[in-house]
Length: 336
Image 1: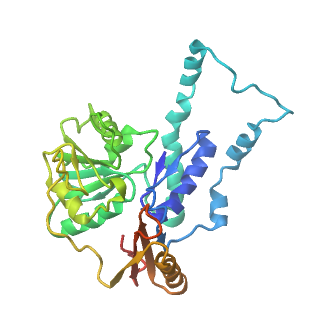
Image 2: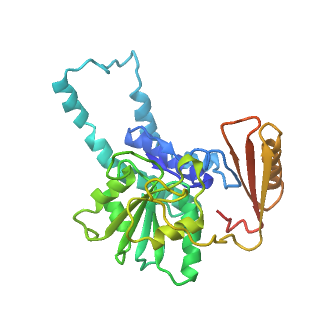
Image 3: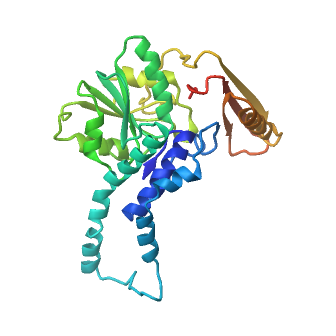
């Protein structure tokens, strides 16, 4: 399970998922935030097929093809198995999963060499001596990065560990990504599992750090973004300010179990020179389609960085729609 945080990362890391699946002989789920990333329009740098071709392990492709069902070299698969045999066979896949993190990092390194990125199984961003960090995956990471830059100007030492390879979960890679100075870790999950001691990513982090140099670090758990709720910089600041409440929620006012964090004033983290536009419409009136076309025209025919996101609910015709468009002349440092 490989996770991306933005449209650009989907372009870059899908390459990793595809190549690692072929060489590692393990199927991949390449995932990212539904709607928040999947329905976003963003100007990105695309891959050239010649560059992709150079990265393909043709020996692995050949082995993959030879493993296909073929009457010229028949083999038995998918036989009915009794419980005693099935469990034994299930454990036989362990070596493939054990080898996978190294294969994924190998292809990340190849991508990095091609396009100058720094993709890792877990990427850290923030102060080298941060005392409070967030561990998260998905589109919230872009918001966290912007918030970290804002807080750094205020002299605060914070950071984020961005989870790329979620399964197999490589504990050592996580430990290596965390600064030694950390005193508090807040794990953000975009899911809710009623009755659990914590959400999946939180439980993985707790298990991974047990018995390591971070064994005594306080680990908090929180939920965000459910129901497509926006996650704002002010909410991220509230997460960093919180050092006691766990579990907690951001993005809603929880007046039932009182788990939501108190928010401060809204923050403006948008770079100077950026134009933001929000268009309100009525479902089926053509506003969303018109704005999609507009942002594509601007992105394709100017040197401006263009990004757009569209919000509409299940009411369809007659419901409220919102189109948010961002334009920036600084292509080398696009807003998130």
